[in-house]
Length: 313
Image (cartoon, rainbow, N blue to C red; front, side, top):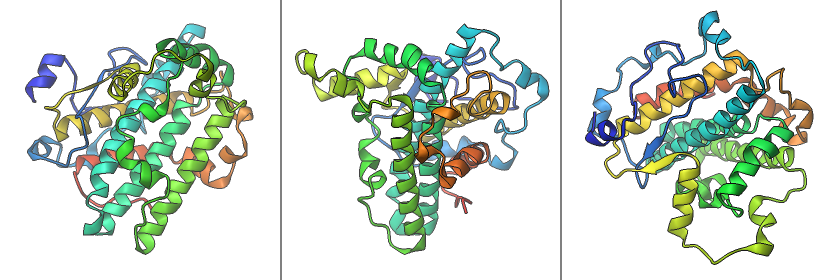
C-alpha cells in the first residue's frame, strides 16, 4: 500500500465478502482520492487479485445483509439518496478516469473499444442510480445543498470529464463494428442524461442558469474544479497509483449493488418511476436499468484485470 493512502486513512482493501463495510455504517461515505489526470495500469496492478471471478460484487448477498440496508425512517431515506448522489458521482469520476485511459489504447484493437463501451454503460447506470430519488427529495435534500455549496455549481467544472467529453458527445470516430457500438452507447448515454435532467428539473433551469442574474466576482477555473471535487468528497493526490484507483472503484460498485439488491433502483417506499420522461421509459434505457447489477460486477472484474477484454454483448 502506498504511503499516501496510509497517511490519509483511506481504505483501499478489496471486499472479501458481501457484508456492508463501505463508509463504516450503512450508506456512509468515503473520501475519494484520484490522480490529477488519468493514468495507465502500473506496477501496483500486480498486487490486485489474480482471480476476479471470485470477487464478491454485491449481486447475491445474504438476506440478513439486505435487511440491515432498508431505511427505517425519513432521515434514513434522505441519507440513502444523498449516498446515491455522492457515491454515484464518485463512481462516475472513476469511470471517466478508466475511460480516458482505455481510449488511449483504442488504436491497439477492438478489446479496448469494448472496454470503453462497458465504462460508458456504467456511466449511464450511475446517472440513473444517482438520480433515482423522487423529485421532491432531489429539491429538498440535494439541489438545496448544492446551491449552498455554490449557486452556480455546474457539472462542467468536473475535472475528469474533459478528457472524455468529445467521445461522449459523439465527436470521436472509432472505425469498425465495435466503434459503431461505442457510438450507439454514447448516444444512449446522452439520451439518458437528458431524460434525467427532465425528471429532476422539469423547468429545465439548472443551478448555473438560475444563478445567471446574481453572479459574484468570477472565480478561476482551478478554484471551480477544486470546489466541485470537494462537493463530492474528492481529493487529488499525485501519488495515487492504479491499485488505489481500481480498489476504490470496486468498493463503491459493491456498495451500490448491495443497495440496489436491498432497495431496488426505484425503492417502493420512495417511488419516482411515474416522474420519468419518455427518454427513460424507452427499451434501451429500461435494459440499462435492469442490467445494472451485472454490468457493475463486470466493470469491477474488468478493471481488476487491468486490460482483459470486456464481455458486454
